[in-house]
Image (cartoon, rainbow, N blue to C red):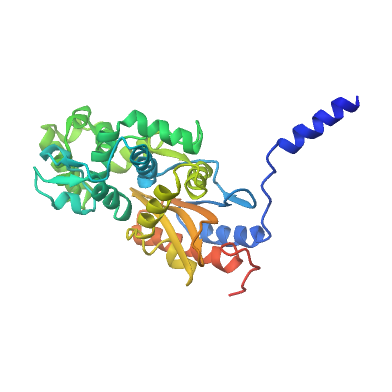
Length: 352
């Protein structure tokens, strides 16, 4: 019996400690409930101290559409190969006419035939969420390898399958008409130039040669809603937190590659009005944003003080609101709430 008790004691000591509930949790819950009450949609938030300690979740075990947050595993896969010496950031890829994908970023301004370095594409993919850069990197690395890396970092069931960004458009517009699955990046760039949904659908019908009644769904909104109901480019916010913790603690990459990745993420300019805008002075945020139809996310590592070692991972998303500026304002308000309840530095609520 003594041996059995001793064995059980050793087993219990070997188990990871349960995450502690932070003292600021009730205050933050009240703030989030108030924000969500004034919002035509839902908010999601996951906060964790790196290496164990406190954790906080608000709808963080639900499935969320992550949009361009899925570019983080692409970046880690690339830098892991650079570490192994099988790739170099100086390697160049030739941009072809069929490679362009709609979205922000400098890659779409480069002419066909231009040669772009992997390091240049990595910077554009993370800092301005360049979709063409992302898809070029996915093609070079292999989609299977990217998804394998995501499962390794975020857990087997944490994230749904990642797709190239052009495939997102094919999936959405393919729900309106199967022939849209054969469209290319330049077609979707033309579609995205048309802000009005009715004009966009009229262009699509003309491009496909179908009548108004030939579309299988009544609206683009219905097509996106059906797409979001699947698993592609989706996942739990706590799983994204796990991925960020792997980056921040050096489990994903070695010291030099980790430092390089974090440096690039601190230069992110997409989403400057989101979480970081609410954090207040003295906080640097190494982060990645994600934006899609009625969806917005911001996720990263808080780097307070000097030396700037990550100590906190924050993942926040909104869904349901159509106005991007309002989504950014809500994410900014979440950042402000985290600051004011004392979550960013482990202090007591400021009462501001």
